[in-house]
Length: 282
Image (cartoon, rainbow, N blue to C red):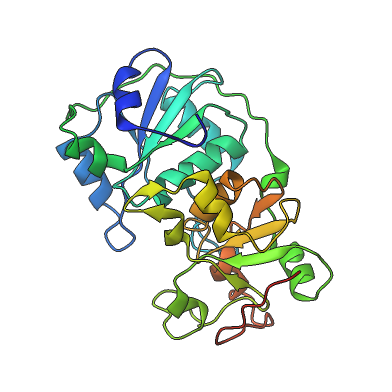
């Protein structure tokens, strides 16, 4: 089934081992997703909060949304009824990025049958499909972790890329105005990591739907499929749609820099670049 499922598919597979996860969230109003969930959600859906469930506590370094510890995330997943045999379908409001964060975490920690609801909550309601208001109490799951270490990287590898000691391509997934340093509404320094190439994460989707595999491949057609690629954004959340897009396009050696730009600029001696320094590495 690839990386996404349709609303029609999910409607036919609400029962059994399917766990539905609601990841609606707003960076500017962190409690709004939970409030929307209480107003109405997909039947049986369990809510995951970006800050509380899908991130660890921010520190001096590590970025604004550091990964939760494996022990904490394991317990969070098990409380939601997730086991190793579960099929998990995740949705957000239709943006794709918040659902993608949980998708990445579950896949990173070893769960295979994880999918994003294409179009999210917006598409579900547009089709007039049923909603619920009760908060479920699922039976606890048993989730044994099998970590994919090759799916993430750290600041030391980013430094190697910046110094030209790696063949990896570094992709900045933020909006273009943030990439060039024209606008920086969140992090303390405007610009991007030196040498990073710009590919806006929002181009991975069209009105909340992930592009077809061939369309994703066209976005990254400058590089061979075996080329190692690292994606980052502001805090490791919105880069994940590009991570998925690269997988759709056939790239196997793809990593996420979880701390992303907010981690990079937390070190005073790390250089930044301004302007459009995109250059294609052949």
